[in-house]
Image (cartoon, rainbow, N blue to C red; front, side, top):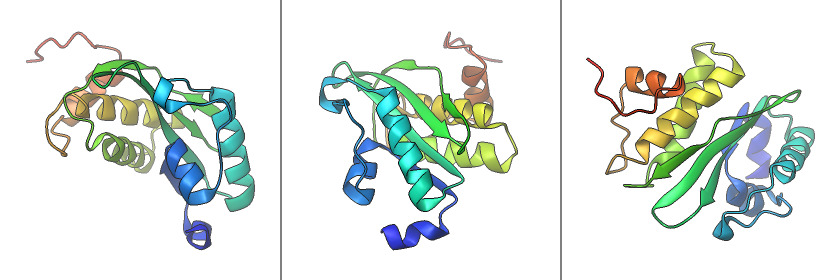
Length: 159
């Protein structure tokens, strides 16, 4: 896999992907206990940037309170700055597709020329919503993602 990294501009994964696929370990992080060390992630991102020269590196951050309740956020690095998104406390209906929703949301944000901050917030909002939808497809609309991204987590019907 590392031979292919020279062709990658945006590397998206999580701590498990970084360790098992690329050999980078985030210190003092235990995802089974819901313990995340943001500085450990930053260190891994810096090492990945140095080794592979990715333009962006992004990871979802899952804090497991229980199988049904998680904290959900993300960290993105552009080689100069880190951005840690807001965290959503999510009651999970279906986790399948959460990472895919994050990745597609981040790519959407970047190709539509959102700032790194806005692209990250869009991606996290899209994937947080996906966790509440059964099945592996995110059926949230662009409007619903933007409403959540902009801070309205009330769940009120928008007409």
